[in-house]
Amino acid sequence: MAEITASAYSDLRNYIQSNWKYIELQDDTGVAIVRLSPSDSRVTWTHLAGEQTLKLQVIIKGSDADITAPKTFAKSVIYNVTTGGNPLSVESFTPFTIEGDQDELTVIHSIEVPKVV
Image 1 (cartoon, helix red, strand yellow):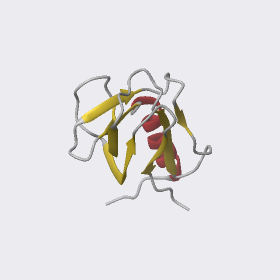
Image 2 (tube, helix red, strand yellow):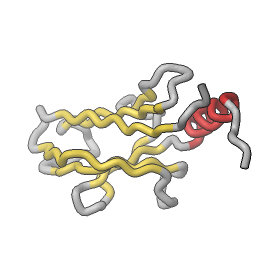
Image 3 (cartoon, one colour):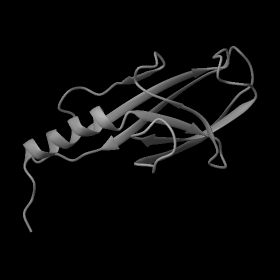
């Protein structure tokens, strides 16, 4: 079995960043609360070019129009489609409840794609 090259890992990271665009935040029972794309101002890729860990960050506020408090967030899931689809990456975190307009949640979903050294 052959190992893929550093270029191949870089290509995989680029593919993921270009195609795995949607981050869904779910409650502690796995029910979707909101699914967003990087075109939403609350979502950004935060990793440096060439890093092996891709980081997609979302910042949710209690004052956001699509958030109805109280709401408990406990998981982020990455998809390549706007609705439905199969989860491509799932990351749980300590549950956080937005109880009012002043509350804010920052989630950084990390996807590890190794690189050859």
